[in-house]
Length: 117
Image 1 (cartoon, rainbow, N blue to C red):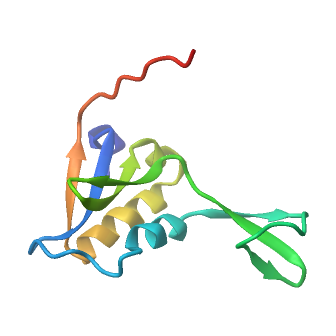
Image 2: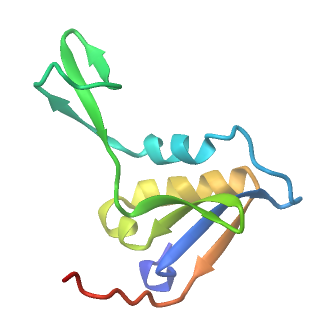
Image 3: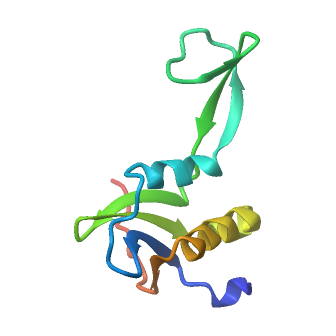
């Protein structure tokens, strides 16, 4: 895969090629978590985390992978920058979509952001 030919964003839609809704309903959250990193936290006050022998780990999700709804369909939006940081993670996401016959949309629109005031 040549990163120069990748679109700015790739949208993996929770809709199969046959127009069916992809299941399970939390597929996007599972997919996002599959390439999260887990850091060790020393605080014992953390909720909803994994604990192993007293060590707690909290997931850190990449800002380059986002969940959103488009036309009522749950989607995972993958930014091209993920390729620079984690090429195997990027390929994993696209292979997941291909293996599960999910619709994939290349988003070539240039996003313009207004500066924070």
